[in-house]
Length: 327
Image (cartoon, rainbow, N blue to C red; front, side, top):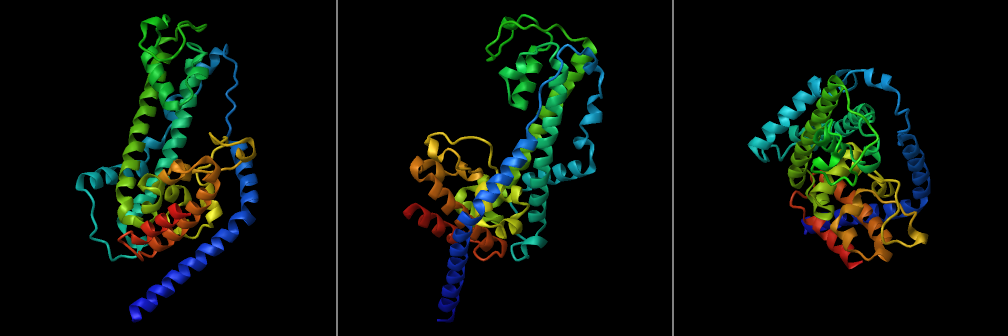
């Protein structure tokens, strides 16, 4: 009887939190969107430059602009990740408070490192692009993703006849000219570093996703382990995510883009990582705004359960997921 009463109290508390979060959605969303738009505008890169300025080839070498891989923090975290992946899942610290769990701390560190790796790849991409413009100025308009760009640069090298290179890039000629051998080598070295960082990032994310079923079983039950890891990482940890209003959760990972399949009236609707969930993708376009709000609200509640380790079985999260499907 006592256990049943406690369970009812717990569910009532969750329901109260859910209703409060839904009230916050409409009140705060406009301010959040305006702030997000301002931040996104500041993050846009200006890629215009003087392609003929050969002096740009002589600016800082790679080690002066890319330093992350040589830091002790990077080395320590990557070593811990490799050790953890080799050892497999370890639930020996199940009874610890979440913040005292060393594996949770490693996940928080990994999430922060993955952001730093992404930023480092952008820096290296700019280095590669600035060097390679003299050889193939058209390439940056054909290949936009930094890692794809690095792979293409490695394949082309100094080859002038692009028909001889096995590429999916739709260009057979270029107005550029071969790079000096030392500049080409610096460029290739930068490509190798970008690819190595991308590989490290994938390893970090693989580790984080593999542990989400243990760290955040209820959140993972709703949005999946990959999205759960992204939400937690962007928020700054599970505890931070648990304290975040649902309207903020909805915007985590949001980009400046229109949603495919939406009418003009709804094209301004902004959504982040939650659009990658199975629930969002399987929802008819006309209902996706509602689905996203429900996902955000339930994800916040699930994060609160997980942050206190209130339900390690994930049953609460599965129940929330079923409720979303019904609505």
